[in-house]
Image (cartoon, rainbow, N blue to C red):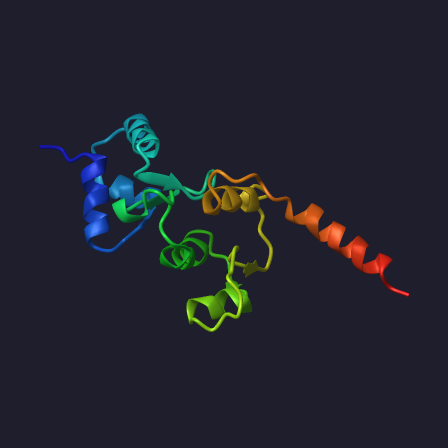
Amino acid sequence: MPKRLADILDEFERLGKLNVRGEELRAALPETSTEGMRKARHRLQQAGRLVPVSRGSEHWLIVPLQHATAGSPPLETWLDSYLRKTLQVPYYVGLLSAAEVYGASPYAVMVTQVMVARLTKVGFRRDMDTLLRPGLPAFDVDQAASSVREAYFRHLP
């Protein structure tokens, strides 16, 4: 009996693998056509079981039941695999964000800061903002940075 994509995702989740790349799905279901795979992924995305990380990256997150209300698994479970293995981008997590993971942050961190050398995809920041803050309005980092810079220089003597 041919396997379904939902069964493959359940297998990956049982193995503790929440990051899924396109080539892994194609290898697990070689008899499935490209269109059939696309439709199956779309159905699982509509059901909230699978979340695309960013457009065109061929990388998805499996959403376990305990994280279904948040819309995605915690960042520390998938960020390294996505940035280092899929995008092959060197990165580091900001100091305050890293301190929160170790319980040493003096503040509640609202946004995880991830530093990368340079991204070639313009939509990456917008995609990450949407994924990490579902249901909240988009935050334009470039506009906020220029506002802060202007306010800083206005207060200089």
